[in-house]
Image (cartoon, rainbow, N blue to C red):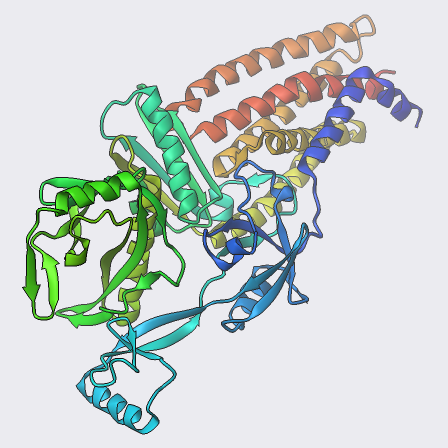
Length: 573
């Protein structure tokens, strides 16, 4: 005990203990944490309207808002949350309690319009004749059955409950940020098609962050990176999103134009002041619905937008001299409005004659999606609508981007990797402890080495939590390298101390000084070797290099001196 008190009084040991305390506070561990943390909130969703906000991507994991119960039913994990969501009914009020507030959400009904064939239409007509009305559930050309009893074409059908707009994950048990390799998601490396200025790069980064946030993906990292040749890339990491969901959205330049003839009347971004995304004015077009074509199904979507007064006036100026064409009972202008996305024609719409020369700010945008089944076509149509809405809100990028590499990581694999990594780390420490004990045959040497190795890992994790560094597989490899280097350095210190043990004239300071001369030389060599990896592979190896440099630096300047002071006290006779 006297030696332990002497060790604790050493200034180098005190410094190490203080840094360890700060590291634990930064990590903020809570292994008993339950609930689901909110990853993102979709705009105009029930959750968004209730006042729930998306967390900042830079906020510490343990500061995230955590859902604890819904309708007083405890929510312990993702399975509880999604199990409850499968049971909720439309047009109901749910009480959602978090660790920060309580919210009242209104669930909304999700509907689709089903096309009727001739036999089904005749059956519906017979039902209508008997019942006179079916509460307005049948619609034709956006009008209820009361107005169009004689020609029913499609029926409004409920398909469940509309998503309340929350993306969640199991509540984090510490402030250690897990990279995509450990929590699942998508990593995309993009390269500008041409050389761009720093100002344009800043515009691209801010626009892409906004585009992904508007799309409903808030746990996003967007940053510039370079390779050893000086080529500039954009690295995007999106937690909890699948590869197909974001790949096209990121690669699209997003240049949206609406043309009448050779004149552009409005563009995405500045010319559009509002884009509807709620179920009341966006979804599968009830006037067109879904229909079969050769090889599959196709569904039309539509949503309304509001133009700026300047864009509306341009449309009025372009249409004022157009002729009116009559087709049956409908009247249109002689030219259509053509919608282009990245110079590709998305859709073309007839312009009603009543819009001639009028500066109308509220208009409707439409498009389509396809699939082998009605369900697939509906999903593809709504996905295309969501992407187009996002681009209309955020506007275009200064330059087109090419996808260099995409990685989709399953969250299941990440959880298994963490579990296996912990098991292997414990097994490795046990093996190292046995080898050290067999080598030196002294507990006063084996125990400090193991303690110092654990201290280095805690310091490194604390630093990562403090600066918001994401730990992925490359970073874990860096932790292993730094921990292994630490054990090697401690063995060097111990060997140098024991080498002159029989020589009482051999000064302790000379022993430690000689050991640290070797350690510093190895440290500088390793740092020099790691620096190029910070930029190699467009920065994808940065996690390994950065973690290794930080780990061995903390070891050389904090743990190695404390270990040397401890060994000196334990072994000095």
